[in-house]
Image 1 (cartoon, one colour):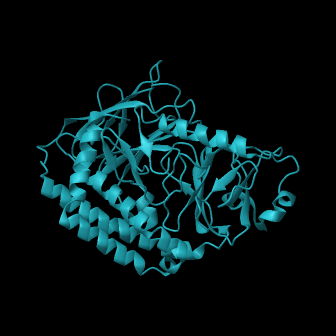
Image 2 (cartoon, helix red, strand yellow):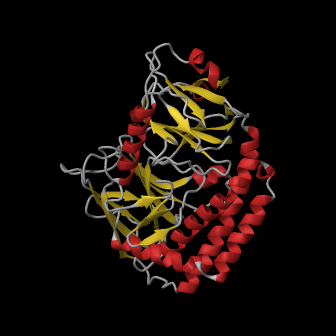
Image 3 (spheres, rainbow, N blue to C red):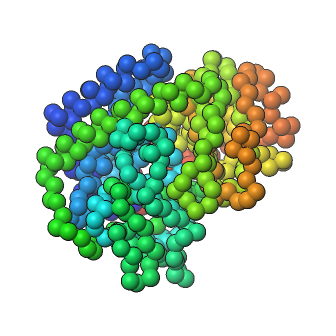
Length: 422
């Protein structure tokens, strides 16, 4: 992930962050978020500055990478980090997935582009999707925000014997036989790689270039400042628009599972809320849904993932103990419960939850049956709520597990990199 283009984009983002316009946009966002009903809680106040900073990072890196003449791939949706000789603000936004390598590219829909990729080792789930808007505030509904102009995963991609692939993005089908993704109406593309096995799987090497189209608009630094300010405003409004959905989800429960459209095979997500008193835990058991990839993650009230790189703020199926009946049981709590599948809220007593299934095979269990059970329990009675053979995890074993997570997460960088909280 440590490309020269990434370093250039991050340096530009850092320069935009220092402008008076961006500082004002961040304060305006802060004031907007303070008006939301859930902003009154102690946990929301505790994590308010974090969401402002992360939303800014999302806006800054998006603006800095927008280049219609020489489009660049940017690695987004990461915690704050130090690498490549500088510090980079976090850019996590609206239920970011710690397993995903998110690469964004901004396009104009009249030009033609070529995306080349090749494996650098064992790979995770690979998908490409073209969207109509970067934030939910730019469209009329959440469904519109999720809507893709075109998308593909390995089910559609054409790969050679080494696993390399070429995708042509643009208004006309290519002559070289490569996969064509239509771009009409699209403004940016997300390239996702979901790493279920952090220890062995590695991000693909990628290049993206513009090969045809009308004379591109050349952006100035001032143009990029204006884009960042706009995305900061829309980003905060998007978080605010989550309020109706947030309010509809029962405390210590989950909303309805939703099907997603960026992959060939069925994919699904369900979102929940936790609110824990001292000495409490939420015990959740999920059905695997025949998925090739599944993961569970905890967030702050502002939908920002908790520390997943050096703590257990997320888990894939590969990182989880599976029950004898094929289900997965997780324990959500701020304090180490001494058992497997601990979801560490990083000290928070309330926030949100996200469970994802991708590559589901038929027959798929009805979405209403994705969750087998949810129980709020006292930590003192936790053992009685778990399967009798559920593994215990002692301090030494936990320490080794978390040390392994830190190394495995850092390996995706390719160079020395220190994440906030390491």
